[in-house]
Amino acid sequence: MAGRSALRRGPGVWRRLDAASRHAWPAFCTLFGLFLIGLPVGLPGQAELRPAYAMACVFFWSLYRPTSFPAPVVAVTGLLLDLLNLSQLGIWAVLLLLLQGATLAARRRLAPSGFFLNWAAFTGLATLLSALFWAAQSLLTLTLLSLVPLAVQILTCAGIYPAMAALFIRAHRGAAASELA
Image (cartoon, rainbow, N blue to C red; front, side):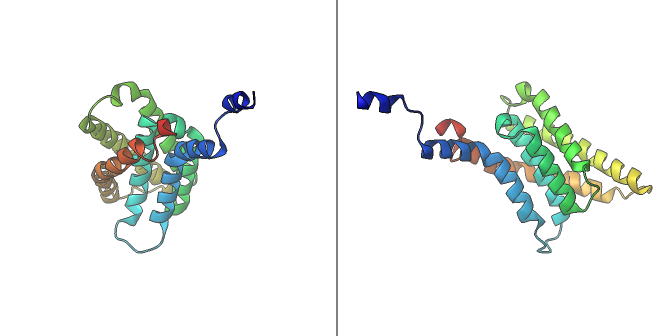
């Protein structure tokens, strides 16, 4: 009789902790990565790397693990990016939420497709978001800002995504796989 009640118990504490950590991996990876990139180490192009990293994280995790990357986490990511880039508070939060919405809307078509289509979709969305950020900054400062930083940010986004996707795919299928918990 005692053995039968032990079989009815739910998963143990360690198993629940393992499942929770696998579920929280995308949010942790994104926020911790932004903190690391935000450290003042003086790398050239560090300012352009932050939005590119955040957009790549939001796009990838919204595409492949949307339940592990909810909208409040995306908003916090955007606010942290605003604080690190010293931009007006809320701009990146709104832009990243728009990116998440567009990714979720196209998820059925993009998730089963190949890498190059996903890369092209990310590059297009990152270009649109970067242009929106440039336009918002120009409007808020009442000056027409240079297009050079916009072009650098777009090229950084297009260039960083393949490496980021390779790392995220390994994590998504490996140690952070929620179905293995």
